[in-house]
Amino acid sequence: MKKSLLLVFTSLMSLGVADMAYSESAQKAPHKIDWSFDGVFGTVDKQSAQRGFQVYKEVCSACHSLNRVAFRNLTEIGFSEAEVKALAASYQVSDGPNDAGDMFQRPGKPSDTFVPPHANEQAARAAHNGAYPPDFSLILKARHDGANYIYSLLTGYAPAPAEVKLADGQYYNPYIAGERLAMPPPLSEGAVTYADGTPATVDQMARDVVNFMQWAAEPEMEARKQMGIKVMIYLAIFTVFMYIAKRNLWRKLH
Image (tube, rainbow, N blue to C red; front, side, top):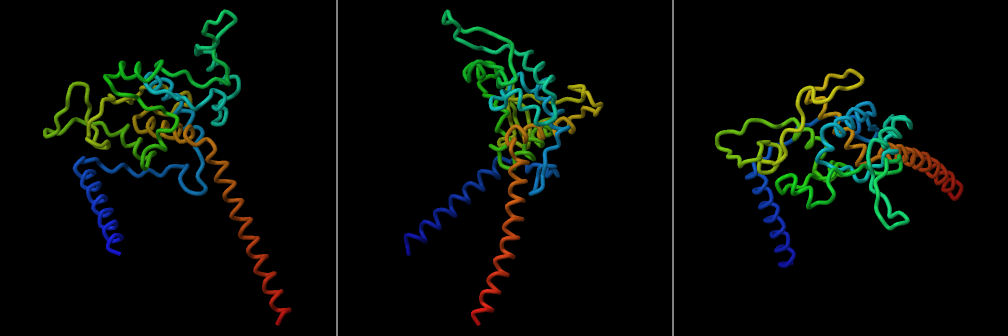
């Protein structure tokens, strides 16, 4: 009994220390956005995800990889096969070895995954003052309250308060632990020109890229939710039939 109480006390103390550390970081709670993909019936806004892909390609892909997405997967958010083929062909992909045992470059194919901006982690860190830009494929799921956190981070850059001292190459953002990060503000008004005429404000681009990241991290989400709803309906109907069968059986026995 004493040992159990000690374990409980130790756990509570650990949680208290964690809460203190979070408070000391002065990290601001993220905005709460009403995302279309939230909830049991949530779906990905495919038009927004297409715009988000444009933001990724024209702004974010210079630093961030997209290792778990193949070009052909983009048809799932509304791109045509012709658009996917043209996009894939615009990349040079390392392939091989050939008959001579050498690696070679070739135009990309729809079955290829996106070409990363850096050859390896060491090259990425060397290009970004030691920081390693995370892969876009799963980062939304790797962060607590990922969609709201990333939206808040992208839109949360601000001048540093007088009490916050920034080193060279650091930027102030209250939505990250420590309030400092090495990534410069990636979004600015009009950074891209949307084909559908949507104004490319920082808020809009942040929302669009979050929708794209949600799809990239969980492309099976809609199918999974639809299957879950069907299973729940089946179980509800099955439960009703079993209840009726039970009542009839016990009525006969009585």
